[in-house]
Image (cartoon, rainbow, N blue to C red; front, side, top):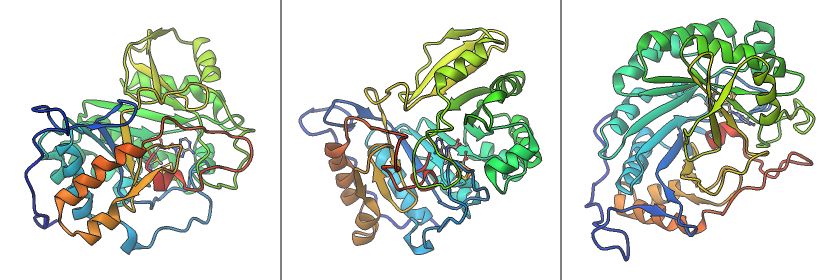
Length: 350
Ligand code: SAM
Ligand code: SF4
């Protein structure tokens, strides 16, 4: 990517009404936003049954934010106190020239953590480079250790390729690797112990995720396959000792230390445990919509701001600050009936 075309302006000295304090993003419920999840593409080489429909229509390219626009958004958020950015998608590693964006983000003052979520398929090619550009931690999705099941759940993925990707990530020396597993009744709930064993024996943490009702997927009735985090935890406790851990991410995860492996296991439970009270995050879709809550439609169109005021950092900063007034108190996911949210997870940036 060429050097960026935006005109940096002075970062405001302090938030309104707080002389001398560093600028921060604070919503109406006094929650401080310090974490941005940035979807860099809606495209993916997989079609996971819980994430996409089989015949997904992707966003026309001109509606995707450019790498320069993404970098500017990252810069503005960091100037407002965000210190962690997660790159996601879609599959972030299929976005052309992603490494140049990561390099730009890595150099932002105030950014403490640059992390990425991936399906692992491109890691044999990119793991070492990701580490070199300064990505410290990776989340890698893996729902099953059975090649046929893997093909059925991902529709187009190859388990061997993802396992090779995990090996490449282990070799590259990341500070931390975590497996993400979405658990569905009748599909992979009988593998929760094996998945924990797989992760733990390699020194990796693991999070088990309850399926969320985003988008019309066609493959299954989400309510019928719902497998709660409490059920996952009971299944794990037949084989492992889970010790409550104080670890918090400001998100929907609750963590336990696994006595047998020394690693962490997390449960991401938007249905069975409310996690909104200490929410510290917002999401940017690949089209530049700033979503104030994963489970609601409250959003601000940052692409419009970016394109009506090209390179104007101040206009963008104002729009981001104003967005705090519409961050909702919480989500109300419900698996029964039609999905309330028609947007898919790959658009949203899970
Ligand atoms: N393609 C990358 C991957 O799969 O890791 C990053 C994007 S993906 C949308 C991010 C995470 O969201 C993955 O761990 C995936 O399993 C999870 N996910 C996708 N659809 C979901 C859904 N409907 N409910 C819960 N988790 C979901
Ligand atoms: Fe692709 Fe990730 Fe969605 Fe699977 S969960 S289809 S890998 S974006």
